[in-house]
Length: 307
Image 1 (cartoon, helix red, strand yellow):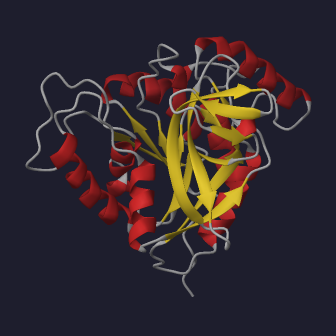
Image 2 (cartoon, one colour):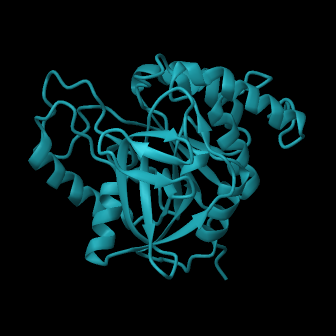
């Protein structure tokens, strides 16, 4: 009997960090200098993931390998792929003045050559908590061999994902009666006001317990074929728009609408947090320190390996 492959984790770490400034993916925030990404890797290893694929920019590969991969490579199989502005399918050519990455949908496509098993994708600079990784690993590991179109996501409650320093962008989710995802709509200027959250761009308000996507998705490799076609359609329409980006939720929404996939929604009770703004940093440092003090995580997070 063939043993099922352990799921893989794709970590998108190529973002510019415009609002925060600098390479926040490498910012030491934990009590022993841990980055937020360290916690994701730690949680993934303990949940049963067997491989990690990092999507980065080639320009900081050297620093990344020294500061990041050196901590992980003897604990779990690691691969690195690159998201570059000019990495487009033929016959498309990136505009010469294009600097902005093409978005999360494009970042995930860069990992397609490294993935042949069910996989999860996350942002490098988001703290998701232990529960999300355990839920995702169990769901992906239980899929039948060669499963197609049976995807999943971990959602959080909106009130647990806000920043005290300014507005945030979140994918507001609506669910079907069978707990599958019906729709995800991105709202870009969400801010808490009392017992509700308002989107300053549209004026819409949402309850604090509204489920939201934090880019914690579970897919099987067939996802890449769907995504590649949709990315080509996107380039035909938006190639020369300076700020246009191709997002994973765009692919998800298309697959739901066309009936090509269903997305099981698993809800995390934990609080998400991250450094959206520089002012968020001390808050994140304090919360991580507390988690270590409560023995949720060991100190240091990664003990030296026996040689």
